[in-house]
Length: 474
Image 1 (cartoon, rainbow, N blue to C red):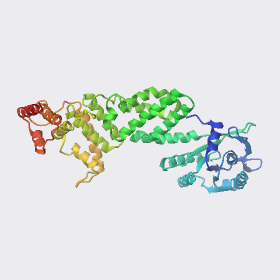
Image 2: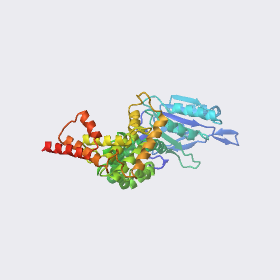
Image 3: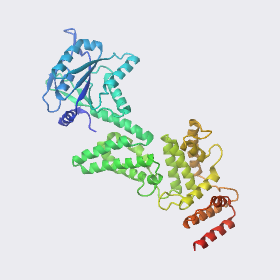
Image 4: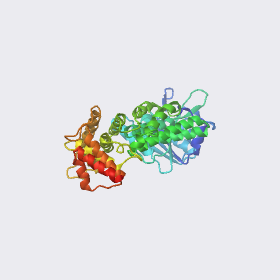
């Protein structure tokens, strides 16, 4: 994003390439001339790029001489219009614009009048479909340009398909030099960035950040700056991949291995930092927060202490973004991983459904029941409250937070046995071994067999069952 300044030929070409436009402009009273006792705007030669200058007291007239304008909407108080309205109206008609309208606005001296000004601005910044806006703030009086920016930000944030906008300002000079018309459209881009970054930081949705990053990459590519273009492309792709996996709760894709999107985003933030600072300053401002969010999140195995902590961090990240269903679902799966063994933990080709079911049974015996039943809270959210006693929203939110805190605290303590009589998890391990043997034999146990296994606590009996399965396999 470049700093605002005098428009050059590139700005002219951009404006000239646009289709029909609505010019939204302000009209004030101008300067008071003591000698004549009248308010006036002094004529000056306005210049836009390489086009021939236009001499006029009114910047709106000059803009209509530079670009194709189909409508002009003049926001002016009754006082300002009574002084200059007729002169400006005739000047615009002389430039060939037929559709010229005075929009009466209040002085803005009270809160009610400021809201009225805001409403007028919103209406004028919403032209018919296919039209575009040129917003001229040159003659805005007092707070009018500020409210124009606020209304523009509002419309672009809430409208489904806001009109493209260019913002212009005529820098008046008393000297013989031409008064340049500056292109302030980077201000609009900054407003868009603010909206997109707010959405990303609050929800994890990155589409509004990815699109301008890709656009900047393509522009640099056309300018043959391949290294910078590639750096921004990698940033856009890493953000997009992480956001998509985050939105769909793809835990393995987010956290596991060399290709984990969290690992890729962390690396790209480090590698593309300087390019982002040069070409995408708004995004550069949040890079430290972005890196802190994903730093050290990727792991090789979710069953290790580091892997379990990453699952806890990811669950808390969902909680921070108020995505409660994802948060409780993830912390429930994290608990299962804590009680799981090989084949029951990491998503992917080595994942064994039966082993996962065994780990889940262990988790249920250890945790479920009572006020903070992890499965019950998850089910209430997952099934949209379709139950006889759906939880209240405020209570569910507290429960999700409590579950995450409970999991984080549990990581500091040794894994407890799941039922009385178990010795250091030996019974749990034997149960898992039986389930893995069933899976290896492609045997689908009957419900009563699964129930019997889940309640069996005699190590000798479990060992005998496992030996039988091994003999059968042989």
